[in-house]
Length: 340
Image 1 (cartoon, rainbow, N blue to C red):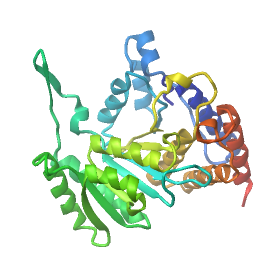
Image 2 (image 1 turned 90 degrees about the vertical axis):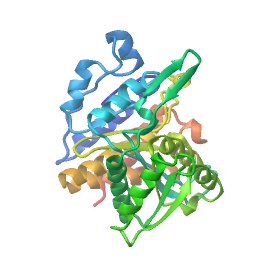
Image 3 (image 1 turned 45 degrees about the vertical axis):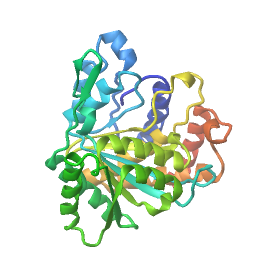
């Protein structure tokens, strides 16, 4: 578990308590939890945002839970994504009962290519007043993320994909992305798919977000759209993310380190709890272990019950502190575990 900066240590303690509870109460699920440092504070202490010891421990793990990192996020997150080839960034956005939102009845997932685009950081000064940034879109990466997105869409009720791009301006790179995605679509005739320019998608997410089921897009567009979708459905504090590769995955809250509320015991741990749920889902599929899937479902039901009972932190209209909310969650999770 990567502890991070700002509210990261507080959220990490919440997840650690949940993991310890599951470890102690389950006869089948046992964990070795390695807490490691990365981010701004690690850079101050070790001279590197991703210290060598941290990197080595992550390499030896089966999955990584990452709490928010501060200004050095690119030196942590992007390095891990590239090293482990975490090509699929998956961000679900859905409404929860008793959570104020712009729209209701929304249940969508954004599938974002996670290794290319402008996030490669290929920038240089052409003169002292001009910076040029290079964008990379490859056929292989586009095909890989399209296949992942169509598999997700095939497992969902909506069975629909919206491919988001800007090929009318980015005539080569986004045209390659959309053409490759269309080739993949031919393998899934049961999946409805449409194209949409990114600006139109941003508008439609406000006007009629229920029209979307699975959104497939490139790195930068997906980063922005998924944050918008999280806010449309209530709060970025409820939004988890998975970074998935062939053999490894990293799970995290979508939101940042929130330095302004760090140490105040008011941060909302829901997004990290839901990231833990996603980790169990992924591990269940990878290791063909139904007990991990069952634990994921218990976590989801516990979150639903919390909000049904209007048990909330202050940022979403409640009164509970971080620790109080997590204790309520653990109590409900315990009740879920006792059900037959």
